Image 1 (cartoon, rainbow, N blue to C red):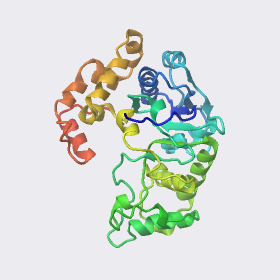
Image 2: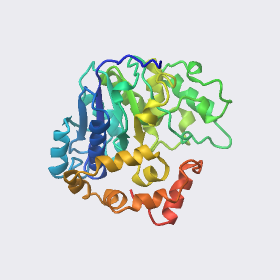
Image 3: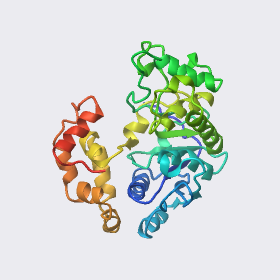
Image 4: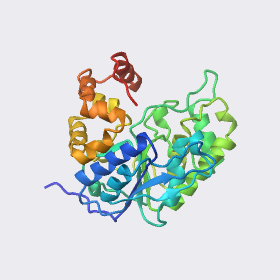
Amino acid sequence: MTSHPAPGPDFNVMIVGQGGRLQYEALLFCLSLRSFSPDFTGRLFVAEPQPGPLWPDDPRMRGDDTADLLAELGAEIPPFDNHHFGHSYPYGNKIEALAALPAGEPFVFFDTDTLITGDLASVPFDFARPSASLRREGTWPKPELYGPGYGAIWKSLYDRFGLDYRSSLDLSQPDEFWKRYLYFNAGFFYYKCPQIFGQRFLDYALAIRDTPPDELICQEMDPWLDQVALPLVIHSLGGGRDALPQGYLDGAVSCHYRMLPLLYAREGDHVVDALHRISAHNRVKKVLKEYEPIKRMVYQGRGMKVRALFDQNDLPRREQAIRNTIKRNGFWMR
C-alpha cells in the first residue's frame, strides 16, 4: 500500500496581478487552482502594484471584469507599493509584493504564468526549509574566457553575505559546471513567513544591484537579479535544492509554462487539457478573449498548430531552439 505524506499546515498562495498580460494569466492561474485543487484551504492573494513614481503608467489591472471574476474565485487583491524596482525591473514585483502578505503565515509564491494541474494540498512542503523551482537552464552567470569562473563568482556572493559557500555545492556535479552551484528558477518559492523571506530577498537583491562584488563586473544582472539573489536567500534560511521531493511542483501539481506557445510546444497532454477545461466557460471566455494571444492560441486553434510542430517526447534540448521553430512558422506570440 502506498503511503502518502500527512497534510501540512494551511498556507497562503500569492501571485502578482498587473495590467495587461499578467491579469489574464492571473485569471487562468486562479481558475486552475480552484478547478484542480479543491482541497486547498489557504488564502489566495493576487498582489497588485500601485501607481507611483517608479511606474510611468498605471500598473494596476484594467477594467472590472477580471477583478470581478478573481473575487468570485475567492482571490484577495492586496495593493503594494514599489519603493525599489517598478518599471525598470518588473521582476522585482515578486520581491516587494511579499510585504503585502500576513506575517508568520506559510506561503507559496508562483509566477503568474503557471497553471495548477493537481492537488496543491498534497505537496509535502516543509515551510521551515525553503526551496524554489529546479526547472531551469544555466542562464547565469556567463563566465568570461579569462575568468572569473562559476566558482569564484558564486563564492564572492556567499562571502558578501557571510554565508557558507561550500555547503551550498552539489559535489556530485563537476567543478565549473553550472549545476554544481545552487541555482533556481524563481517561478515558485516558499517559506514559513513572507515578511522574513521578503525582507531578506529585498536586502540581498539591492546589495547585489547597488554594490556587487568585483567578480560580477562583467555579468548581466537584468533580468537575472532575482535568480541571483534567490539561492542566497534560501541557503541563508536553511533551505536548499533537496528540500522538496520531486514530481509535485513543475510536475503533476503545477506547470510554469512561461508563454502560451511554449506551453503548447512542450508540456504534457494533461497541461493542455487543463488549460482548455478552465477556459471553456462562456463567461470566462468573454474576458480571456480580450487578450490576443489567448484568443488566438486557445480559442482559434493556433496553439494546437504549434503543438503539431513538435514531438513532446523528443524536444530540442535548448528552449531557444523551440522558440526559433515556432517563430519560423509564424506562430510566436507573447
